[in-house]
Image 1 (cartoon, rainbow, N blue to C red):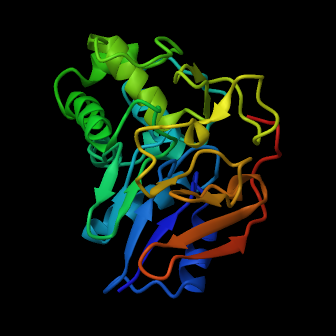
Image 2: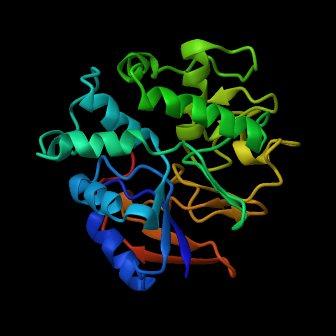
Image 3: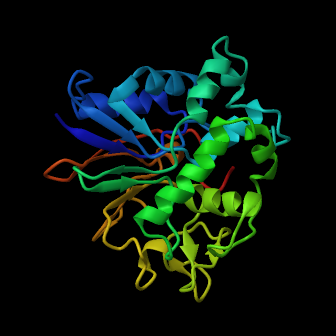
Length: 277
């Protein structure tokens, strides 16, 4: 049995199939971890979503910001509709089941036996595993329940940008979503910079990649994440980036998590040009 974590697919279904063939994925014995952003911007979001859902217990998926974008669109939240790559899902006959399945995906997955934790984007420096799990569950409970639509209406925004255990209500949930699905940089106090998207070295003075903040409470974890295509196939003690820019003509990557840890990837033709939304 092998366990592979796969980077952001964003609707690039054919590339996913080539990667699975490359690693000789056996759906009878192997397991897949998806770091989120299954959909949006690529041209085969519906096929991707159906495929991952149909893997059942062979796959674990955490929510990314583009997955939440789909959930918001499905609940009639006013968004920028200039990108029509979600239309095939929104008009599909099985739309309701797909959206409900997606809403029930976690924001964090932790495997004690394997020794890995997966999120889409990152963790603020104040959160240890227990705090991160608590904040993830709080958001998940709202997405599963009757307050889902109300939460979606409050989900977007860059404030608050700093963790406090005194945060409550929509502010607390919004901060958690921004950490789990959007963060790249923060300062040493954990104040989020949600605008900078480039590789390390391009950020404003005083900002650090979230995983480089001294003394962060999650430093003893092995964290697998995606979201940051300009970071590429980055690894450092305890952190493993998996988004290698498939959508932008880079590569689609898989990280084998069971011993030994190995990287695999396939080149991608790309469906978007860098710098274009």
